[in-house]
Image 1 (cartoon, rainbow, N blue to C red):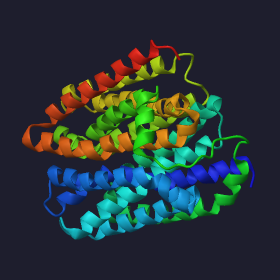
Image 2: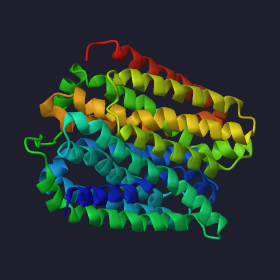
Image 3: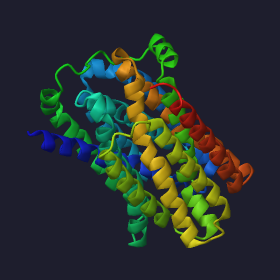
Image 4: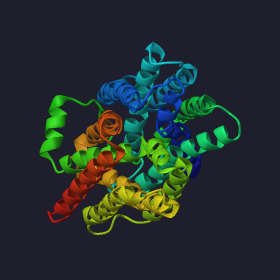
Length: 387
């Protein structure tokens, strides 16, 4: 296979599997069918979070044993089973717990190891571009699966049918990863790091002593903001009398366009300053949610600004994590980057669900805006330090 064909298949596999996370935004609607609330959603996602953290920590051990592409294939099959289990659940119980755990296992493997594979195919100078392309396909799946869910339910299908469709796509994704094992090995850049991937406490300590600790902490804050706004977007839209599909479509299109544009750039001479500016826009987007008052134009504006702020900054931050890492710790740094990301993505919804049920949506949005402001401040402070 030629290099473009191999990359096309690799990114297609990413896209087919990334719809999984977008479906977690539909859990409030799915759970409502059996009278569960946002707290129950948060509890199940906490199960996902715990298994994800274990999965991320041991992903290097598993990939050292099976190989990275075989482990990525396993991730697709695990998520396939999880989504089918979600589609058959009729209440909070063992089925949902197993499904939530399998999603954590599979998603943790894919999200952690795919960037590690890309580092073997790119130099430090080209990582922002390649990570941006990776993020384009990742975000396309994130954002379009809720739109697919809305379209299918409007067309007379049940929400569980969307989970089944994405389950099939994850099985296809796992198969594509298996087929790419030999072609990707042949395309690895000569001299690219292929050290063992195992994450250890000593490695974590070394990473937190290095410059890479800043993006590792920042991604946790950004993931919490992302989860707070997106995981409960169906609840926010319902409270405002709006259609959540409009938000996800506007957010996805904006994010994809921004990431394509950034794929042709390297983040400039001061990538952290660029990140700081983008995350300030993300903070503004969160604040505007407080004054929507059912206004459709304002709702779309919030989605667009969030797409620009979070959507465009994430791939640059991921590339900076790899570039700021010690060469011998690049795989471990990316795993830790994913670990803190998942703490925010799957852990913060537990806090968010509690804030919505016991306080209000406005309190949740205020907390999210504060986290966004802290992250933007960290980026600006880092930009003033030597490269």
